[in-house]
Amino acid sequence: MDIRLTNTQTRKKEVFRPIDPDNVRMYVCGPTVYDRAHLGNARPAIVFDVLFRLLRHVYGPGHVTYVRNFTDVDDKINARASDSGRPISEITAETTQWYLDDMAAVGVMEPTHMPRATAFIAQMIAMIDGLVASGHAYAAEGHVLFRVRSYRDYGALSGRSVDDMIAGARVEVAPYKEDPMDFVLWKPSSDDLPGWDSPWGRGRPGWHIECSAMAYELLGASFDIHGGGNDLMFPHHENEIAQSCCAHPEGGFANVWLHNEMLQVEGKKMSKSLGNFFTVHDLLEQGIPGEVIRFVMLSTHYRKPMDWTADKAREAEATLRKWRTLTKGIEPSSSVPASVVEPLADDLNTAGAIAALHVLAGQGDAAGLKAGAVLMGLLSPELGAWAEVGVDLTVFANRLAAVRTEAMQSKDFSELDRLKASLTAAGVEVRMSRAGVDLVPGAGFDAAKLETLR
Ligand SMILES: [Zn+2]
Image 1 (cartoon, rainbow, N blue to C red):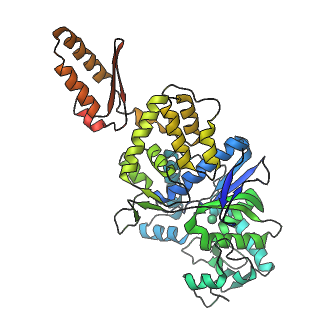
Image 2: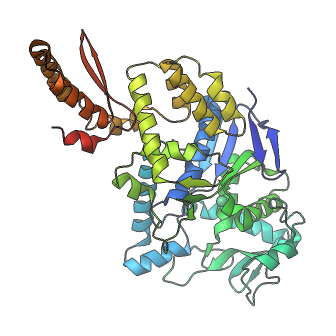
Image 3: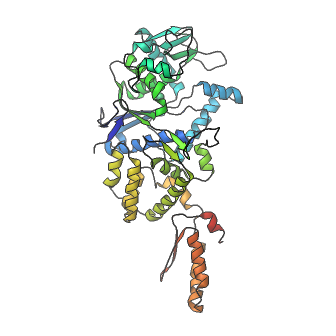
């Protein structure tokens, strides 16, 4: 099975050929741990989780190494600590756990490695030291800066020249920089800030170097896939490439670059000032199941802007409830239907794969539906608690059966019809046969409306 991916670097959809099919290697930029993950942060985590699952499906679960980092040294973290009067370590530990909990709630598998930047400071210092020795970086006033003009291919990923980038970017001009485009690899720390001893004095790393150092340590000088949101393409990913290719000219860093588009809410950019800013945790607290969040995210191709709407969430919930009912107690088929794998292998066309799941559901192929959904991280038992809670329909089934018995004797069916209509209005599918009464939550199931019938 060939997987095809759109490589940002070449701007083409290419057949994916891993360097070593026995160890397919992927790196994705992870969160800076100072606050709850907002909904937009969940998109790359979910998108690359589906790719991780697809790679495991194609190459075998033991043959894929996925690294996603935690940035636990950053000025935003320092600011949060000084504002709240809490120690940095407490904030990063708490926020890291929040992230893991929230991502688990939306069905994201844990990557193979989740390195924390602060555990790789020695490796970053070694890499910076090498860049200084080879003339790609220079020390000045306690800082170390990367000499952007020393790397000829700078800007190739986003397809821009250095001069264009200077014109468009908010580059920080500083007296210790040779060139405004040069970026910080290391910066000095005052005594109240986290710092490590280095050849350039006590300081801390810039953000970009950490991904380069951790990717090299865990995946080598060349690996297969590097992913992230397209907001990271410049300067973060350009800087990663420049540092890594200059520090390790024997390697090519990442062969394939994948970028997911951004997320909007009800057609607008998510922002605190518009009042449409929310975290994954906010949605979960509002009672939107993590599985529904995942489904909505996957209903749009990763290279298109994703619009989160309340309508989509409602539709997704009804669909998942129907599919969960259809597949209850059913074992997934031993092979995943080709109709689901093929769109996924075609540049991660999750929307196409979901369309295929709808077809399987329509055909009543519950085993195929379950196998396809599980490959996408849906209909798993771990994500299913929401569909069980509050949907014990036994009491209504018993009442309906009793009313029916009465109606058969009295030949007055008005009460039976009234109860059936009320249940249907609450989104319950009513099936009555000689054998008994069977109630299942259907599309549009409304637990609150059902409560009023108690
Ligand atoms: Zn990164």
